[in-house]
Every structure is written in structure tokens, then in C-alpha cells.
Image (cartoon, rainbow over all chains, first blue to last red; front, side):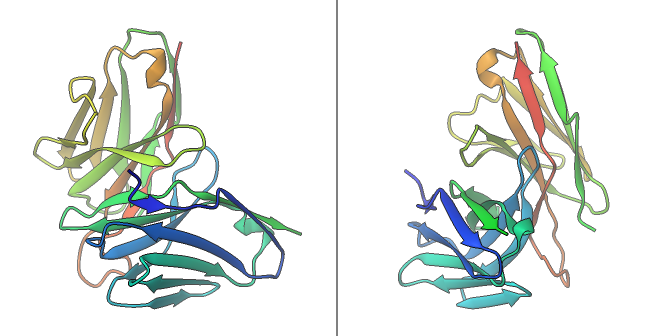
Length: 112
Length: 120
């Protein structure tokens, strides 16, 4: 069973507009959430993270929102740029081992 | 900072041979490294957690005798795919966990660029 789900396999957005990528989780023990960006044939690159004690974290154009009651998090990219086109994975972790459980990814395409 | 390298980036081998993949943390010490594999258009699946100086912890369904992991130093972990078969063809990615107080990305995992294994 998938503990971290990204239900949208793809998303297309016009350059300059907002990109919203969604992620849902089922394990209430998760206490730390991360977003990664991945290009083909490369490893994921860390973007932004959020602890479960917060509901929002912002870093430049990237903002992550966490709704614990709904077990939902989202990544907002504003404004979107063509260089943002990539696969975005959300991940969650818990416990001292800090192992990551990944969602299936969302392919974002930012159209010029 | 926080750079992780993998070698080789791409390897093609014959069925039955063994392949070793190296994962190095270049500018930090990593007491824990993780090994993942990714099938096309799928998520990263954790294979094992590698702790320096101790035996790796394998995820359910991952054969420890087939995927040998050695974490001999704080900057190097190796994954050896023994007696590789075509079904082992995949994209293997390692990550290293950066730990320590005062770091911006405390306890984050930093990923290597991955190794594409093709078994003929």
C-alpha cells in the first residue's frame, strides 16, 4: 500500500503562473516532509522541507504547505519558469532512522 | 556543499556477472547512506539503509545476498549486484544523510546522480 501518494502524474502550467503540486499521506507517524526535483537520469535534488510542527515553509519561489488534519501537503512554485520543468517527488520520514518514503512523482511542464 | 557522487554513471554487463557501484559523500561525513532503485516512471524504492561500520538493513523483499552493501568509511558505501540478471536492470541511486546541529538542512538526505545498470 502506498503511504505517500501523488495522484497527478503530470501538470502543465504557463510560464509566470503558479504551479501547485499535491501530495497525500496515510501514515500519521510521518513527522517530516520534503520535496525533491528530479531530471531524467539524475538523482533527486532537495528543494524544500517542512516539519510537522509547522504548516508553512517558504524559500524563494517555493512554498510548502502542510495540512496535518487532512494528511495533505502541497508545493507552490511562483512564478513558474521553464527551468522548473522536471519530475517532483514528495517524501515523508519518521523515526530516528529518517528513512524516506517517496510518492510516485508529478511531471511538471512549464510552457513558455 | 553536500555533494554525493556515484560511480559508474552507466554500466552494461553480461548476465551472471557482478557489478559494484560506489557512492561517496564528497564534502561531508555520512554515518548513514541509503540505496534506492527506480524503475521507469515509478517512484524511488528504498532497498537498504547502510550504516558505517555495521551491517546494512534491508527492506522487505530485497535479497541481501544478491545486493551486497558495504559501508566501510564515513564517506563511502558500495552496492554490489551479484550474479546480475536482466531483471536487475534499473536505475540505482544512493543518498547520504548529513547530520549535525546548525546546518541548514539538518538530517536531510542528499542524492547521488544515479547509476544506470543494464544487464544483457
